[in-house]
Amino acid sequence: IMKRQTWEQMRHVYGQAVNAVHPVTIFTDSQRFDLRPQKSDNPAELFIKLDGEKQNVSGKTCHIVGFGKAVLGMAHKVHQDLGRLSAGGIVSVPVNTLKQFQQPISPDLRVYEGAPKNLPDENALTAAKSIKELALKMTPQDVLFVFISGGGSALLPLPKSPLTLDDKRTITDRLMKRGASIQEINTVRIACSDIKGGRLARFAGKAGLLVTFVLSDIIGDPLELIGCGPTVQPTKPSTPAADILRKYEIWQDLSPEIQKVLVSQEEKQEFVHPAHKIFVKGSNVLATERAALEARKLGYIPCVLSCTVQGDVSQVANDYQRLLQAIQEAKQHGLKENQLREKYAFGEKSFEDFKHSLEEHLCSKKPLFLICGGEPVIKVTGQGLGGRSQHLALLVSQALHRDECLRDCTFMSVGTDGIDGPTDAAGAIGDSQVIDTYLGQHTLDELAETLRNCDSYNFYKNLQDGEYHVLTGHTGTNVMDLHFLVVP
Image (cartoon, rainbow, N blue to C red):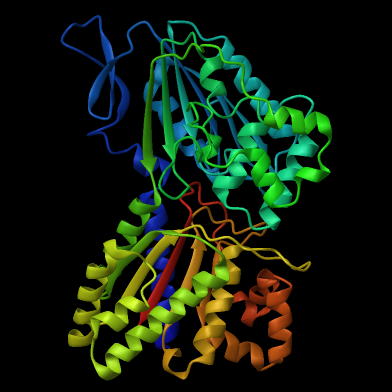
């Protein structure tokens, strides 16, 4: 019963963390951003507020474009706020977004739904072409608002000739399955694209003002990589696209024509960029802060360890296991800083906070609620169905089950977008009970086979009527994954 209560509370904390980075919440903070036009001291002048500063929009027409899992909410709210100044625009969002949105959308906003399973398709291609056409029509009397969020890359495909959509999809799919990082994938996407890597800003070169709002789904919020930075002039990548493709053994399968496009440098010419303001409006940091706040309300001692968890899921599972073992050692033999530091994989910056939280836990006996954010990767083997969050939860379940001292601890791994891999689950709970329940009907060999086959989705779906699965549907936002560890 205690465990069940913990799982429910973890689900609640996740829900609140996601709400904190929901587009509508983000644009309701009118202290800094207020896109409702207001009269200034001069009655003929209208202004909006961008990051606390007045922006004159008198006589301007505002246009909206967006691409990503979280842009519909942002575009809808800003279109409403701008009122008669908004001419509407075009947004490219994942399949089924409108159904989830449950609010009528203005007919002035053209909504394209595409990129099933996060892979570009014809609908997304049509949307990208329409967005390019709109950008090219901009004049000095126009303001173009661009909304970008995670998933934006697949929803704005415009391959450079002679690349086709199929070529681009195959390359991306193979990089994902071979465990390439999101930074590597997006460097290749930019090299393949006619709209990413600052090119959309060039198309809108004649606009009076370009305003980009970004909801970040990449560690460290690198603006040129989120949605592949269509409005951001890219810095030279540390590793060229061709080298990344060689590393994952894809280069040799590409035709000479495609290889040529990927290595040819942009012609060195001056590009006209409009006046541009760019704002990061939501990130994993915001989500983890809210999670900590909610956990404290529920009587836990919360601590955010890291917002930059990355690397292979099996390594991440090991890091969590070592941390939990270090906590158990501190409980039994007292807190020894050097031993604790040795098993702490989450960086020097958060170590002192963690140590204080652990001291409080040892004195007060209140449960610990440890919080991480980030985006690990999974090397897909076998033909199973799953995603990195569900796979990680299963790996942690196995670790908690194997170690008698850790059986009271519990874990949860979830994507803030509500979609983990090509599945309809957001993530899952990691617990020794997950394995106990499974072994009532199955063997350890079958469990090993499930992990080898990367079939975590079916594992959780078929276990106890999906009791350990986290199913939310599209949340309308996306700031990477959240991981919670509870130590009673």
